[in-house]
Image (cartoon, rainbow, N blue to C red):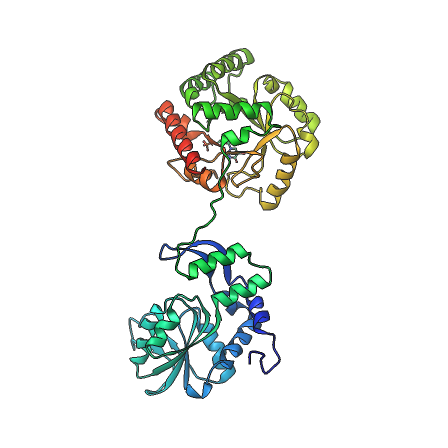
Length: 460
Ligand code: 5BU
């Protein structure tokens, strides 16, 4: 019955071809009604493949008693190209139903040539509850056209067919969602768990999605190969109930020390760009900073973003005026120089730049994947800076965090602590202007500390 006259493929082969166009996605989707669904259907891509659209039209026509119909009409918009293709294949004249009547001129709801008393085949892409079809049909019938049959590409099995049949309409469906799931399962495209979830959903139950939970700081501390500075950072986080790193992007020693004193009690680390300190002097800038860090129990993280060959990085790390290797517990480095370029940061835990927060960054998927490989393979690397989830073995540091604003007009893009903990499983948030530009940086650091900790706990 299904094998077409022209010897076209089986129903399953045809469906798999359609599936390739991305018409059904499986995962976790919130529907318009607010209900969570394990799948999402959108048949509009079918119209973009002429061969598939033509086959679809023929398959639909093959199911129908064509002599019954004088007209054909698609429910806007997804079914319009389907109805057009069916009209071209069958020579059934097409009429078009508007979504809203024209505000001027004829005020017609139905366009095209028809006569009262003619019987119209209605085409719909997806049927769910059937309620929208029940609204559309009277609009056609009001023009004196009769509707006896509806042909549907996919039945989501939410009672639509039964509702329409109870009102006396015949419903012809090409695929049902259960059938589709079975075909995809047979083809290894859906796991047994996914199928079970879909069946649960179709049975009207509230579907339980697996929540992927992040490991706690305590759990991360159990890793025996943890770098000593990563260990310190996690211990401070637990002790202070904080995952906040303040970014001290200030330009004088005085401002740096004042900020460190104010935010010190609330942070796990202070991040510096030491080369922006205009009056930098090792003895007067760094030595007191180390004391403040000890007093308030936080680490020093120099955001140097090394990006050179190993030998140059080694010089930049230990020499010059900044002597970073003397005092930075943590440093950031690009991984663009490859694995050996990271070998020389002996005293500090290395945080690899995997992805950036700025608009138009070149750290795309491919870059990040390769950067993560370098980071995972390198014993000095304790984690990465990124705006995406990274492997659990690495600590994730996320800048671009702000409670007030979405951007700075210079390319920076901000998320909230809640977003980054829930969606990225971040370990530490990095906040700059949200704190040091605040009227009261001490209070702002406390606010970010609390927001960060609550978000962390909620993500566990
Ligand atoms: P802000 O004031 O919260 O926007 O400061 C963010 C800090 O984090 C700033 O020092 C940047 O240099 C740093 N940063 C960032 O914002 N985005 C990134 O992707 C990386 C670093 Br890497």
